Image (tube, rainbow, N blue to C red; front, side):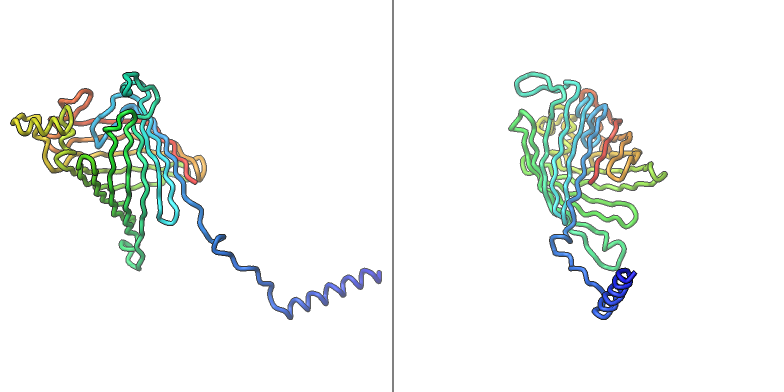
Length: 289
């Protein structure tokens, strides 16, 4: 009994001493502990055809993979698309079956403005360098520089300027996109892209590419009329995804592309497996950490 009384009295004395000394202070976080972790996104898409700016450039099953990493505005990533049906050939003549056709490597920096105005504080300016590696064709490799201006005040609005150093394919892309939560698990998203291009970019609509279009233009052949600067195409994408958890979602999508310019439409019609209106359907797996 005496022992218990001594223990209780000791506890009371210790509590009074701590109260006189003030609250217990925890050590402050170091700058290393305050650092945020990088944001990583991985997308894996399988679709029935591959659309390039609305034009059907590969008529067969393809897989598109992308890995994106961002940390304090600095970002880097890799993108590729692969032929799943062997519709294309490697440099040695063998057909590709699940092999990549192209790898893109990029890095850049994005700065978001602050301020009290809702529109201004959501404006983001991004500069990116991109390297194209066309598998098995060193002559097809290229580089480009991209500048993005975007805002997320209500609907995501983005303007992209791209300059490709090798073939001088200057282009602009204007994008509007918006997503809606249908339920805690289901989300609907859609976007619309309008492309404007240089003569070389629009000339790709011609069978044989922009070099053939330039030759036709000089010869007065109507197939070369797409070799001009102007509006190119409109691409609309709509899809839904199901969120399994905060890191993983999966869902189908539909993309449709229209040639907005008459001469670009005529060039598309002359291409194999390509029309003035092209569609693509597929499924996207998204992982975010």
